[in-house]
Length: 454
Image (cartoon, rainbow, N blue to C red; front, side, top):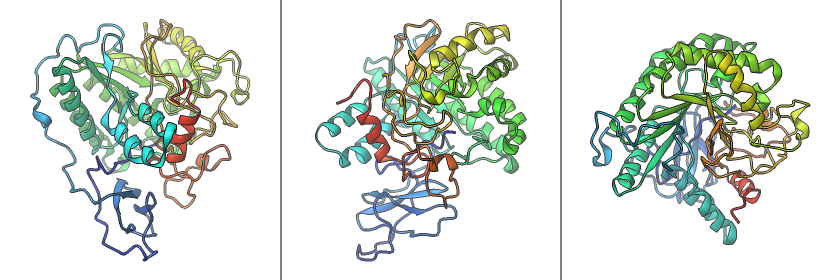
């Protein structure tokens, strides 16, 4: 359902291909923000002057403004920025109870750079001012490929400097690189395949993250584990790719949770949303699956609970059901988590807590025609700001997990990762590749934000 979440901006791009110097009058070169390369791409591979061709992922290269930056190593040294590894967790970094309490959340430079270099230059007046405010909202940083682990360390270097100067910040990250990832969707296929040693490559990915976390054991870290993976095992076993990945998903999720069970870490397994696993027929099997992961991993202390509504649009608490919820009495995330908590306890996971993504849930109802229309839905807006003040004992925090403005998937039917959901009437179009900056979508979120940024 979700997709590779990162766009390497001119300020942060670590991998790029050089664009040849070609005069602008040569119309064969791609214009700014257009595609200029990628797997199976047959179009222009150069950019008009003043732009360079930057690798976003293997499937998509994009013409971005500026000069081609010098390539950098894909993964910095574990002591980047001068910070030294530490052997044991700082007591203030180890969460006791709600990990969102007693700390400030960090607004990472990656998303700030996307907004400042891609969004704001196309805006003016009140919209530009409002966009600058969005850039300062703490959102999760996605490690959706091995190369993007370096962005985690970049952020931790920044947090350490701030904390050494008297701050008290925690980092928020998404672990998202399972082999044959997102088995029921095409838009978000990842870099690893089970047929090409993907399991061992994923274990190396986890070990690399683990070492970085251990090197910054004085910083509290909050992790969301593998969006969409376990939920697909509940509802999509009729999809051959999901059936084939079933055992590997469970084995590797178990591996990730065990290896990342560290003193300064709090983890939340992704648990879909009300419109996915909230249906009566899905709640029981979902609770059995999630509780099974918890027990099979040895009931790790760092596994705090479940994350819901990741990259989706559901409200936290509604007084009436939107028409596209199709008669389900569980039509918001509050009802969903209160339905799931007792079932999880019955299956051997007591005391489960939740977080819910409200980054794109500000406008209700949305423009969705069907509840399962997940791709770049029309009629959405930025929602409730991240906060541990939830007023609900089951909910640890409102969070922004999906970076608002990054595309869910391309509407180009000829693209290798085209998913038909991205071509529906209720999906904003034309849309670029998943993870690529989608200016029109950002502006929609900003215009419809509730509370407003304007």
